[in-house]
Amino acid sequence: MTRHMLTLVSLIVTCAALARASWTAAQETERGEVRIGAYYFDGWAGTNHVTKRLATEFTDREPIWGWRDDSLAIMERQIDLAADHGLSFFAFCWYWHDDGQAINRQAIADEPLHRGMELFLEARNRDRMEFCLLVANHRGYEIKGTEAWKQAADFWMPYLKSPQYLTMDGKPLVIIFNSAGGDREGFAYLQEAARKAGLPGVAIAACGNGLPELGYRHRTHYNIVPGYTAGAEAHKYAELTAAHVAEWRGSKEQPYLPEVTAGWDARPWEGPQGLGKDPGWYFPDRTPEQFAATLREAIAWVDGHADETDSERTILVYAWNEFGEGGYIAPTKGDPEGKYLKALQSVVKEANGRRR
Image (cartoon, rainbow, N blue to C red):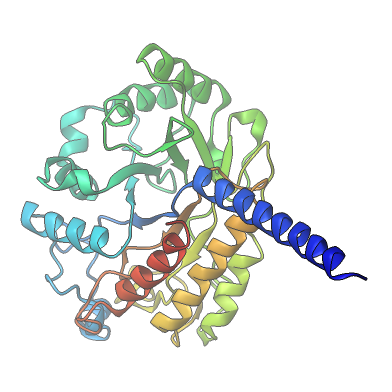
């Protein structure tokens, strides 16, 4: 082969490589920066979820601001901590009053389990993050029947119209915890109410499996727990994360938003000095480094499965503050330097730095 032919071949290869790089960069730019949010359990407005076991055997889980978080100053501090370390949004657990009575705004506002979200909306620095609803329609808080779902939809509409509300392809995202409890007609009403309110519709996501024909357009998880009530046994955090990774799968028709767990150790909830939960497996060897590795794996999955997830590279973390269940990244007395937050920050900078 002559020198001129070698030069020509080299030029062709170089041009092809540049074209591939340009195409990849364009794809990455189009998809934007990774968007990571954390579930927020507001069980710490007072002492209603601080069990004896949690207060005496697991003192390292107490947040650096103390067990009570129902003040505007503490919420603003949490927003700054979360935003500074790469969190884009909180997914607040929202609870229906399962008492057969009509829902009303004052009763919901007075519900301690909603105090965090209300404080978030009052916070002076709320524009640093977005938020969405995780409808915790489980035992004691189930939304039963089409009329109840319609009533809930009307109640949610002011939240969905908030400028801070998280959207998926322009539509506000609502995550349903107990997907089997969803209601086709209730979801259809929610979509119509959203359009009447000037929104393009609602992105309804099921935790676990949710039938598209019911109205679920996305899937995700709240958490995945092997051995949930299989008896007290210590297992490796790697087993827990592997159970999550195995569930990362979606489709163009029903994109999946991968959920990454920060841990599971619900011993503070177990037994008579807890919340009466039956003993189950726990995973005590979690580390910030392992958490970071799983986050990287989730980002790699999102980037490698664009046809199975949303276009906005959204990932959910269980959780910001599930201290009783052992899934938390908020700084605590056992982690006053916020090593889990620093791990998150490092991964987010690494992922988004490739897009600048």
